[in-house]
Length: 212
Image 1 (cartoon, rainbow, N blue to C red):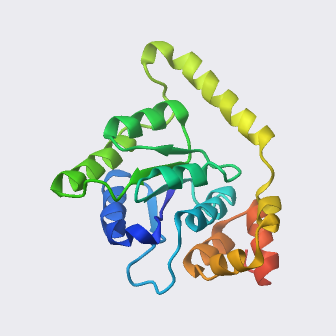
Image 2 (image 1 turned 60 degrees about the vertical axis):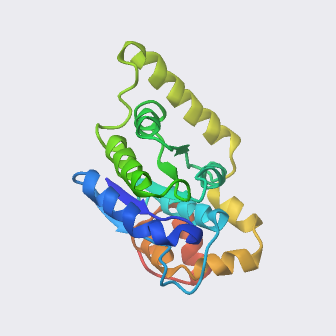
């Protein structure tokens, strides 16, 4: 599994905490940190980051994203507006576990601006630990596994049918918005190198890149 870590610039001071927790608990995974870092001159809102997450997931450059913003809810809502992204909201370890086991999505948003005394850091670590404690999509409770997995598959099919393609979404956005996203070169270059499908092809045309 290839996992990306990226959160809104408003919570850049939590990036190292988030990245280290994912590296610690996502055993056997390849973990990549896309910021946003305190050292970055450009800042990105949760909406802008959600589109970058869309690039990473729609192109299959990564398999899963761990993210967040001040409340965690804005990032969750914005990510769920992206074609092909199913993002959960996990303020507690049990929320993270249930999302992984029942909903089997590909992104998780955390409330990074709430209660960050020592106990907040401990809660974040335990939340990430619980997220990756078992293989995804095993269902919960065990007595309801078949129905839960059937419902999850149906939800994903409905979302695919109800959403436009990622390239079509990008073409509908203002040029100034897209140009700002193009400045996040760690994400853009990663998608160009490892991504495929319409998101990666759209980027290649936009940047004139011949990277595979």
